[in-house]
Image (cartoon, rainbow, N blue to C red):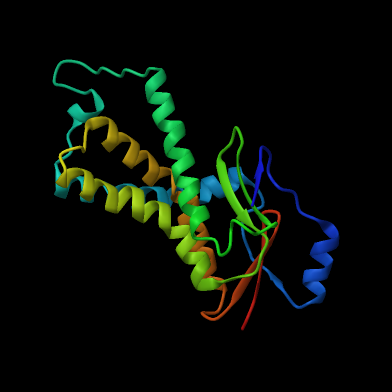
Length: 202
């Protein structure tokens, strides 16, 4: 595993090798901006699912966001930013722990840029493992976590906001899930060259 502070770049030579070995490029957005735009429907779906979970466990009201009948109060301080940074780190670490042999792998990367945090492996993984890696942070942080925190009386307004933020931030993961499920056979395998994804049937 390697830590990076910039996005891994595609290797043109490796690209030629993969094409020559019959790997098929996944039809996917060519930029983070386009991926974010295409992810908006998934953002709304994630938000609704998470909202329903929080509402069912402890309730959710506008007061949790600083909105009352007479005023709107939004308070952001340094600790809130640290909580947000911590959420991003935990989100990516959850991705990471589901990557096979991530500790020993020399082709697995974790990093953060001004655009986003990321986890990337250039090792070959199965379609099913890719889906687990993609789903994991949303399920753990935006579905299971509010249930657990509610049971122990720790689902505070701040935690609700962070959990909802994670649901929103997971939208690109859900776009990736959709692309893989609609293009890659069930027993297929995947490999990355930078952020460019390829697949091959079993």
